[in-house]
Structure formats: C-alpha cells, structure tokens
Length: 116
Length: 117
Image (cartoon, rainbow over all chains, first blue to last red; front, side, top):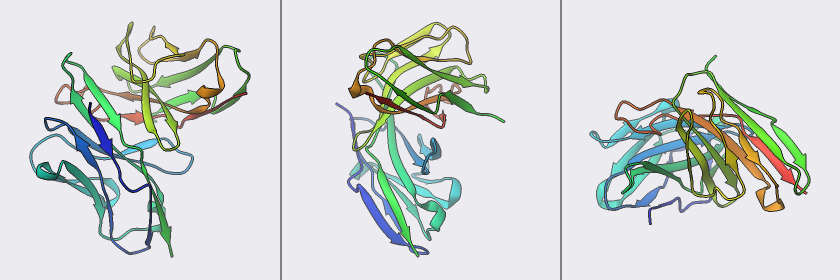
C-alpha cells in the first residue's frame, strides 16, 4: 500500500536559520508530489508541487523542494526562515491507481516552531 | 474573491443528532473533496466528487454521506454522529489539472471544528 512518511513531528529553528523538512514515500512509480502549509486556524495552502522534469521545484514564500528518486524523498527547504513560517507542513502524494483514478495521501505533518 | 467557504466553522452536537456541514466554491471547479484532520493522523479523505452527481469514497467514508447536486456545493452529512467523528473537517476544490490530474492544485476551506458529545 502506498504511504507517505514525515519522520519529524516537531521541528524548532531560529529565525534566519535554514530549514529542511523531510518527506519519504513508498510507491512503485513516481507519483505527483506536493507540499502544503497550514497556518494556525487556517486551511491548507499549496506551497509547491512536482510532476516531472527538473527535480528542484520552486514554490511560494521562498520555499523549494527537491525530488530524489533514489531516496524516494521530496524534502522541503528554505534558506532563511521568518517568524511567519511557523505553521504545520504536510507532504502529500497522488498516484494513478489500478482503477484509473487518483489517490491522494497526506503525511502526518511536521509542526514548525520559530524562535527569535 | 476566489474561495472555498464552509459553514459552520464550529459545531457542538450530541450523539445521533443529524447534521450537515456545507461547502461552497466560487471557482467553477470540477473536483471537490472532504477531509478530516486528526492529531497524529494528518488529513484523511472522506469522500470526493469529480463532477455533478459523481461522487466516490475516500479512505474513511463510514458514517458520512455527501451529495453533489450543483457544481459549486458539496455538503457533508452526518446522519447519526458519534464521538469518534469529533474532528477538524476540511473541504477542498480543484480544477482539472493541465495533466488531467484531479488534485494538481487544491484550494482548501478554512475548516469546521466538530465536537460530538
């Protein structure tokens, strides 16, 4: 069965420091890959997505993610975090199932805390 | 403003009392979906709809019903709520993607927090 793993439940970084959030998936083929952000009390907002092509994807708010097929990973990065980046981050994957429809699966999320 | 709206935002109810959470989008999107979010479990899909009168089960459909009579609306119905349906619920919509995918760009509503006593 397909699965998405975000190994870090909670990460704390200092403002201005770099950030990397991990995401691993288990599928036989390359799925569609997404990162979403959920600010406190808000719905989810799409940060970036990967379908094919260049494995380094740029998103909104200064985020980027790199797809590594050999590691089945799609880690999210930001070179310098701001206090407003404090939120919960979800990785998600979509794969065409044997029945021709897509199945979207979310990871369990990583909560990011920013300290001054 | 392009948006997905949900009502109510907060709801406290008792076991067995039927309730409906409404969801509406003004972007003319074909696809709509309901999720529940629980601590440590992330988001799990309840039901989705690919167009009017076309709905299908997600990962956790038990205890829920949906309908899609109009393109813009996708209500979630709990016929007989139970405490294990206490959760944060999100509605989402998306246009058909440039690659034909269903979930290429999802737009989420603000969420409905439900407490079933």
